[in-house]
Picture 1 (cartoon, rainbow, N blue to C red):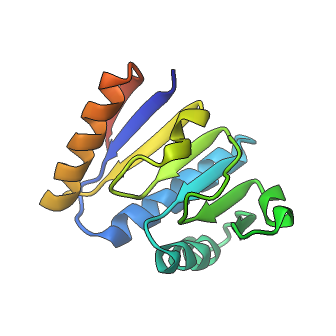
Picture 2 (cartoon, rainbow, N blue to C red):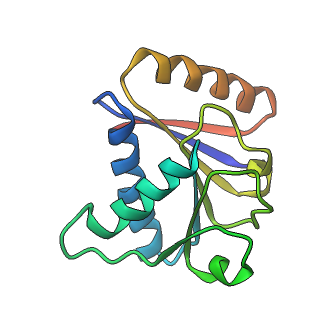
Picture 3 (cartoon, rainbow, N blue to C red):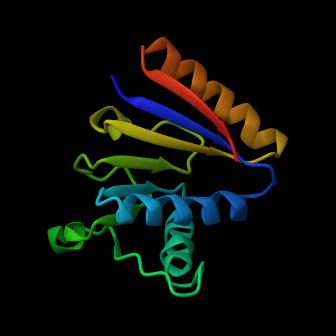
Length: 142
């Protein structure tokens, strides 16, 4: 069973989730972990791609958008929005309203919850689903 960490953010909006995803990916990379960031849309994946270059001065987080080219998947951080054949990595950062089908293949999953009501509601559904599957759940207020 995977360990699922729910990070409860104090601010509202998808931008807060995206920025925190970048910070979390950077931390994981520095700890020599591999990461996949799963977004809801290709536009969100592009936004994360851009943010990873600019979210913090002096930061370097090597990453690639997932495409059909297996070469793209060699980077320690991958970003994608579809249900592509994503190989297991050390950490999955989920920015979707649903649990991706491939989440079961990851030993750790990070769910980022902003303070807006819609995000909280969808996160509660995912929490209940993870709990029903027997995963280890942790909650962190950030």
